[in-house]
Length: 384
Image 1 (cartoon, one colour):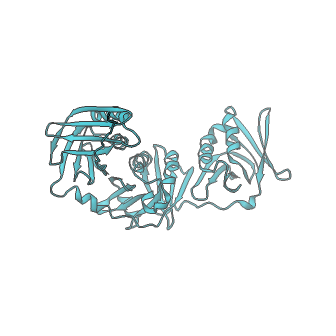
Image 2 (cartoon, helix red, strand yellow):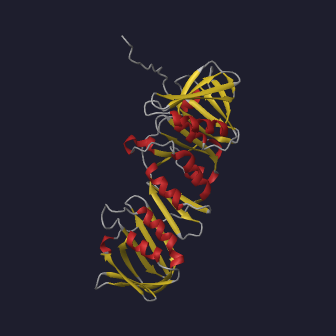
Image 3 (cartoon, rainbow, N blue to C red):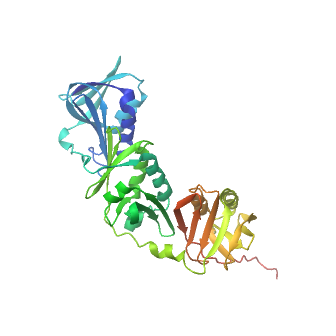
């Protein structure tokens, strides 16, 4: 292998590849970035045995070939080199890759190409076009409600399911929070299987970093989701899971039942108040208490060692529930994912699911479970 390539043409792709490979653990194959020179291009490939990334970039190839190098060392070196032309030459006898830029010369050991395993090709037939920035937003607005524990199977996944008239529901659930974003995409609706698809949360962070604002192509095979940049230079694929997702319509239906209470507050004002009250939370009491009446809501927080706080907010309230408690940090995080200036909290009971919605987020909904209210009594020694 002998080629010349410009750093500025490949460095972004190399950094994406380095994000995927394990830092220290795992087989040498997994810690490697594989370089394949052929037909005037340099292909950069990386995998963690689940996610696969491949980027193909323009190069002046004199001698084709394949080499696997220590991924992070190779990327760190090229990142620290100045912009300009770089020569890559495989010395098969010495088992090293020579890297040269002017008077700078380096050698990195290479892996036996027998360890290389072919990557999944992007299935072009039936691919659909999607907006990269919309998919980034979808991940951001759903992933925070997905469980971090792989052992809980389906609720550690992003779920996307086609419903009626070209609409798709994207959902995330972790046991005490649920988020759903509905959107319209006829082509993707036709591509998704009727039972939907599941993508584990642990892959979503790398997918979000790979995505840009430009359009992407997406395809689904039996066991994988495949994505490709609009210019065809980069592909990214990840495995699909086969768990059974819970029937979330049961608790959504509760929000539309009789006897619900509705509270409306200004989002920014509410977030600011909660941020201040969070100072008065403790490990034993992570909640803010909402005392509800027609024209206002009084927020309180207290901890035995941190003191107490109370703030009153203008609000619109219609219901019978007089007091309810929510985890302060969770509620701030939820509100931060909305665009609406004013939010509606639909309360089904002091310990029942609470749905949050806003007029400027008509297709987005988060459900959070309140905390059970336990009245705390503090004791002091009495004098005899």
